Amino acid sequence: MSNSFSLGRLFSIGNLFIKGGFSHGVHPPHHKEQTEDLPIQRVPFMKRYVMPLGQHIGIPAEAIVKVGDRVQRGELIAKPKGFISTALHSPVTGTISDVGMHRYVDGSFRMAIEIEADPYATQQFPHAQSSIDVGDMDVGQFIESVQMSGIVGMGGAAFPSHVKYSIPEEQEITDLLVNGAECEPYLTNDHRLMVERPEAVLLGCEILRHQLSAKRVAIGVEKNKPESISQLKKYLTDDMAIDIVPLEVKYPQGAEKMLIKSIYDKELPAGKLPRDIGIAVNNVGTIVALADYFEHGMPLIERIVTLAGPGVHEPANLIVPIGTPIRDVLDFAGGLKDETREVISGGPMMGSPIADLDAPILKGTSGILAFTEKETSRPSEYPCIRCARCLEACPYFLNPSRLALLGKARLFDDMQEKYNVMDCVECGACTYACPSNIPIVQHIRTAKDNLRNRKTSQ
Image (cartoon, rainbow, N blue to C red):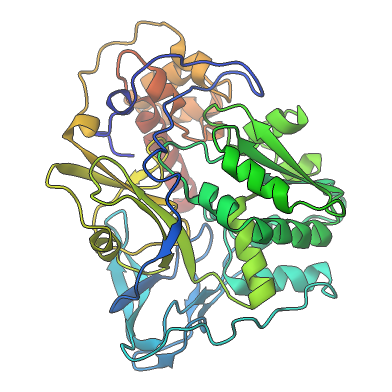
């Protein structure tokens, strides 16, 4: 999120801290009314698609196509280049027009495959209804299959899913936890998935539960999504080891540690992964992607994106082929209003500004939000008044105020050695809570980037 973006302006401060589930956290307005009742619709296929090779955490994929090659929708175009890497498939039938450097959403240039869509192709997925028999797969085959499907975490982090499913022999997964909280304001893509495709959600849960040998599944859904809860319960049968768990509405309820605390009343120790306490956590969008792959043979070539915010003419929940230029998606929804000043990818709390609207939709793009001057103008920053609101807001029990001061002084080593800055998940609750309008999370992000870059260069 850019320094110009103002959480204080975007949300009126009030009723910040609520009880229940996990301590601390904040309670921003939901702002989901724009799109929560809008059915998912599909955008038309565009002329050009750009598929960055590194749109997931880990090693970028390796292109296996060259300029001039004709590809079919769903065809493999880049293979994993290591274990923490995943495959890439063509979102359309067309011709490879370039393999080179293209603009990324953050403004940088990254290696990507450009595809010119065939205007005469039906763009129907050629292997639709061709299921993959997952029942007889062993764990190794399942992990390899998921890696080649290109599926990553769909909640925004884009961590390769197969890596999560690679459980050490000495560990056992007893519970599968599915994140349907969608606690970020404005975003409703997960909500619409649960409302419109509950059977796919439950099928994906059963597939993954079987492969991980988990005893039960819990789907956590915030109570501000009653239709999602009722739809999932409607299709739930007695033979499914699945529980639908309504959650108190509080940010960041969708964070792994918070979900685990809210549902299982277990604390995940710092530096540990959910699997260390027998839990596997997946976003509901990832679960549906698994169901689509094993039921219909479709790799991850499209996703649902929420288009919302005061700067959008026609808010919507859209099925968008990955690689579609953001500008084309916005144009489909009537374009941006003249008073729009900033467009971000993701939600307003953890999202990041889009530097180039010609950059593509990625596997991890959960939303495109447009805001006007009213929401984005940064109010005057004042000195810290030691009110401790940021401490009360931080769900990870860090000291955000101290971290911000150290970040300003560029004392990054102290931030790590004395205050465990890398434990921060950059949820933005501290910035939202600060009455002095200090961009706390931005200082923390700068420090973490510096520490990571130094570690990489060593």
